[in-house]
Image (cartoon, rainbow, N blue to C red):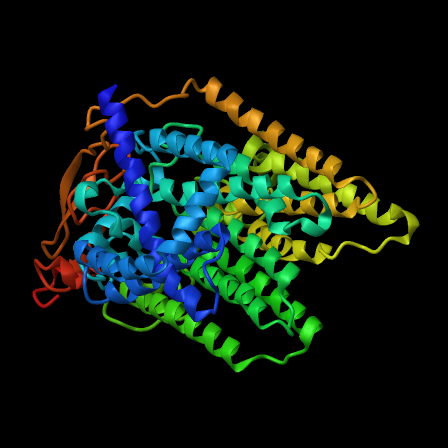
Length: 587
């Protein structure tokens, strides 16, 4: 019992300190936008903006140095004076939260629940297959040229791995996997709970913040992430994209509701949306189409409300953020793979470590095939729609991630259409237009025809359900607002009851303390040495092809033609030779 309390307390304290760290970094960005720290909502923004800023800085830092304890110290020294300067605002925010005892109690329960789930053994397959090695490389070396030649999955340019490596410090050295995703989920969960209480206090639609309605409806999905042991102890990028996707919709709704060209202060809603969209593009390519679709919608709204009277300050701000985030990201892609956006074939640069074009094409085919029919023959799967029936069966049996939000979306859209058709008394239509759904629909169409695996768009399904419900709730304006609000809460509770059912069914309500100081230890993968043609030694895992605690360099499928660019020096990376070149005396 003591081990359980100590380990959970260490997680909670670490999350608190990291929240202050990222919030402190975000204060500078808020100041540059002219946004005062006057509410708890802005403090939450400071966390996400500081987190995005840290990713931008780390992308540059890692070009020359490993992401290690020194960088964490620099971030702490930069955040501390910012927090000291805003200590009165922070104290006021904490006091307001303390006075709202029901919200405080729920946030505390959420934090305790998450800290307990953080003790579970990391079991996510992709984390052992790819993620943990990517983070270890970042933590150990500056960016490594041609790392994708060692193992193609290491060429995926996910900036969130830098964040995972940053947390691999102090008592969490080698153990940041227990705290990385839980922190982000907890901060968003606190935001969603605050939104639910803000929603409850709204007496009329005029008091309503649209994004509060949306965020409240995403609470069940956040808790769904914690159902299984190991549900938040991983380095999976999909969870981060889910959160960025939800934040994008929240910030988009705030922009649609509050931005007016004549109000200088409302530009803040455009700035933070631009930052989160650009950050999402660096975290994972599967987000790019959705992010760009949101950007197009913002530009259209901007033009319709104020013409193209763009302010120089706005243009400069967005341009600098884009350069600061995207240029280092593309540079990193060139260094690890020779491509601007691997596994996309465009932007290829001929370098001595560039991944062969035929391998990139093969990777694209494999990805397109496995997302339709795992393990299928690309020539058969991609040549017809025979994969559609088993795919659809899987879609319908995957209840919480896909089926449930689909049913909610269909029901809410039907209710919205009925309300617009009835519209008694010729009352005006709600300000929130159905056009807000378009970025989600565009992303779903793109997803279906490219990589139709639900893990890439779970946030899209739930965003569509939450946003459709928001539209329907606003459209039935002749019904008392409190009654509509009760219907929304009933829907949330129904989804939460299903989450509770899953927890009970899996008999995983409480994670017991593990043997590793209260934590359940990482798997130890067995491995063997694989010697390439030029004598480079690569550690190859045996069994399930996962690199849990396997020393660098590790690759599940090493190739005999891989060679170190500088013999014996991992820092200088890898390239691929033909077998003939590798065996020649001068190869």
